[in-house]
Length: 476
Ligand code: PGU
Image (cartoon, rainbow, N blue to C red; front, side, top):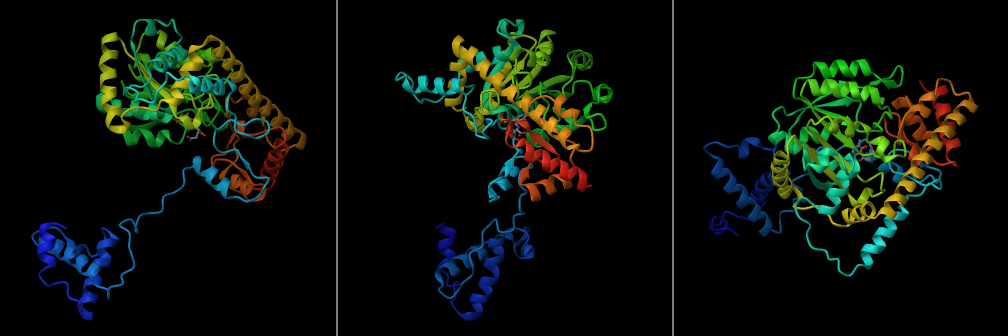
């Protein structure tokens, strides 16, 4: 109890009479209810000190009195009900559904053809090696994370013998998966980049729209997807990049664009790069699917390697959630490719100042797994085989779903299911159709009509095809 409270509570104000109690209760409840109640009673200005002392006295009196039975009221009682996340909320709704045949195609997480989560064999082996190594401990990592992990992640993205890698022009810090890498990169740019404005494609992964403004960047958009062709609006994209201010940050999906599955061709990437470089804009790559798009790590790195090859500066947020199946381990890296080694050194120093007050240092286990797999030639080769196996299964699901719709004569052209790249198909189904499929078939997908092909299996394709067929024929 503070001295002030002690003084006032002993002054006899805490009366137990019926009227007094009613008066006290009348004050206590609004206080606990938070701002917005009895604003006049507690308002600032000259009388503020008096009023707040009375509130404290009332509270003490209430606590001491057996006659006051004010229901407990939380300081957060009047919070607005938060909406579920548009992607992760799909899993919440799915988990609540008691129907045994329910199917979750919402979140982008790989499943086996038996519909089960998959822990890669190379991950199991790396973990076994780590657990068996008694020389290992659980000490804190440095702020920038595990050095071997950073070096190997950088090499995986850019190539081990890339000039930017060899000349120490890249500052890499381990972060909390792809999202954490984006956030740390965005915080850094908000503080240290001369044009704190970022352009994202329309549409984009929903969390981009939240991460960047939260970090203090102004969010703007460029055209990307053309619903009419279900392909890239290349001319629109180029026009919008041209019209964006010089120096702006441009968010690019390195491969397997989420949610559309539509990527620029290599020659289109070259044209995009020329515009961005001519305008001295800063490309910020989000690479959440390297190896998952084509099944080949190098092919999927075309976009970011071509940008890195021209010597210009860029940023890269890298995730190992999908390609190594380490979703919940939260393993990722932020790499800032700088014009000079000296700039890279300075950038790394400032990144540490961003990270330290946020989460101090990153977790060890997942990074150690990745470093073990990438650092061991045999495990690395085995990983590539497993990765290709996952990518191929998704491609097989595309073929099977397409054939199933053709077999049903489902109205419309479904060739985009075959053409789109990576984990997702952007079906073109609207929100009403999505809701209908959830209601009638217990098939769960995001409201924008995106389905995770990685969640589909041979046995569930017919069910999905029936649901789509019914929705397309009977729901506008
Ligand atoms: N960037 C893109 C383009 C992504 O699709 C995702 C994950 C991330 C970053 C972040 O991944 P990390 O897990 O932080 O490494 N998108 C998935 C997963 C669910 C989600 O929204 O986080 C998805 O289903 O879109």
